[in-house]
Length: 218
Image 1 (cartoon, rainbow, N blue to C red):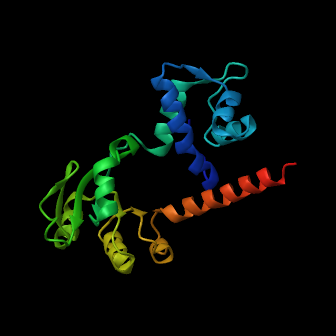
Image 2: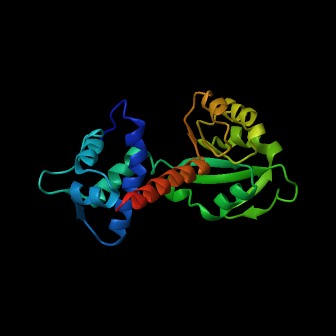
Image 3: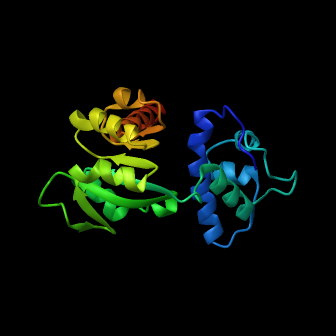
């Protein structure tokens, strides 16, 4: 399954969701699935799913459905989950610590090499499976180990300068939890901004719509 150019961001954002559900089915011993069945699981249409997969060449068979194994393997290839990308995390506060302890970077395509912080009470300790180093060692470490991405969980005020420095030293992508979107997106490397508040406000809107529907019923 080959990647086509100019695939929309909406399609790309659906790929992890497909992969997560298909991986769960594979773990349950399921071997085949139709676009209709997958659409029902995800609240999409079968046509939308076929269109998304066709962006990468498509790999189903009319009337036969999709091999779950081949779908998972194809999605792993498209998303680069087998490329052994590497990452560093900068900022071991509450959020950084939670990611280090609870998030499985490896199953999502990245080996987390190291974490950095300026807090002397944290530096030198092990959090999860990584050791926290002094942030003064960050750029020499990046120069030597050449991580592909950096996870930014630092206060927003220091995020732009930090991101600029990381990109200058060769980091090729940023997973940004800092809220400083425009300044970091201007660096011309892939950036994925994470906003918990956006997700919660989206839920707030949906709850309001749900309540309005209930109240409007006779």
